[in-house]
Length: 137
Image (tube, rainbow, N blue to C red):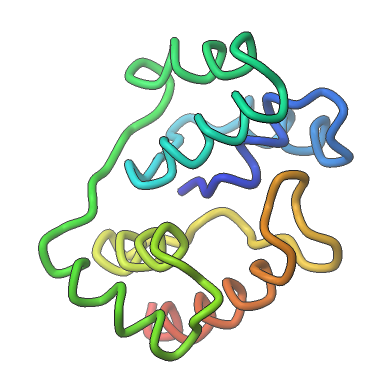
C-alpha cells in the first residue's frame, strides 16, 4: 500500500529516494493506492514539479494502481488515530485505517530525514502509529 511520500519520490527524479522507490515500485505486481492519497500527491507534484509530473501521475492511476477508498468504519477510526497521534493528519490516519481494514501494511514510513515533499516529523509519527495499529497482524 502506498502513501504520498514514495509516489512523490517516484515522479521526482531529483528526489534522493527516486531510484530506490522506482526499483521497488517497478518490481511490485500490485500497487494499492488509498484514494485519500491521490489529491495529496496531485497537489505536491503540481506545486513543486509542475503539470507534467502531475499528469504523469494522473494518467495511469486507474491502470497501474489498485485504488481503495476509506471504508465507512474508517471515518470513525481517523479521529481516534489523530487523537493519539495529532501530527498524522487526515490522509496518514486514513491510510492506516484502510490498511487495518485490508489487513495489509502500508509502504515503509522511511525514517531519518523525511521524504522529499513530506511534512517534517510525520514519518516518525506514522511509523509509531503503524506499529501500534498493525501489531495484531
